[in-house]
Length: 329
Image 1 (cartoon, rainbow, N blue to C red):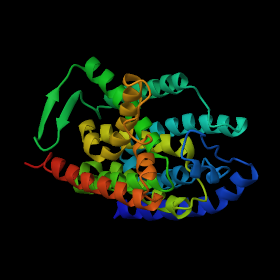
Image 2 (cartoon, rainbow, N blue to C red):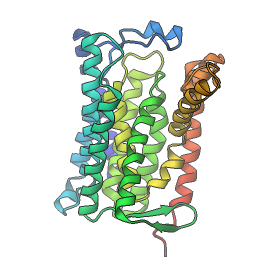
Image 3 (spheres, rainbow, N blue to C red):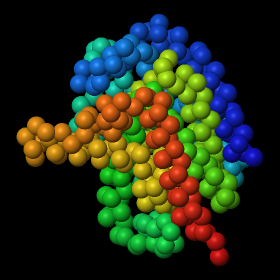
């Protein structure tokens, strides 16, 4: 019940925040600059307000504080650790967005600056979770219901790069109206359901439920044609939240399933760049990342969003089936 109420509170707060935030962003001329190398028809989105992710960041924060209060009184703060970690990434994204808006160009922080900030945040989060006894250096393997035991240092290095990779994969997926939020809703629902299914993770379930509500509210303003974009503020926050939830549940390998769309989007970029260099100018995809390839194939934005979010939902169901028996006798 708390998880459902968290979703409702987050939805209402985020929707109201969006109603108030968008006019402010317009007034501040916080418009998105569109890359010239992208699809030409995306140029009509130039000037659409960005940093809209602030609305669901606010909604999620208020919802988890209210519905997680009783758990906090008992000394359980896991959901706050996840929120704080995601918020750090949101701040990194906000700095990036602010630089873009200020310069009126689609360039903010350098890739090196982003990487170092994200890596530092990831290591700090992992060490905190380990110190609090909420994270083990063991990799739980879905479906096989077994664990691979690793030395802590090896696990730390592996985990830090998984987090940074996940965050940036979610960021890459944020390229069409409603795409990143639609793909992430089933991922958040997966973590919410687990929280209810496994009672000891109720606080994390509350966070997942709040994410579902916040993203649903954001879609009111972000569905095609979008009135606002989440910006790096929102996409890096979401990436941080997804990665942090996987580690807070102590099963990062589940990201391979729930993050299948993010992985495909990222791999399409890697394949495109690698193939381009190997063949001296030829392209494997018509355009990367993957959602742009399908646009070039003639798919409408709404169709891509529906197909990608359906794939995400199917793999989240598979992920649940793969981990549901973890704590069963």
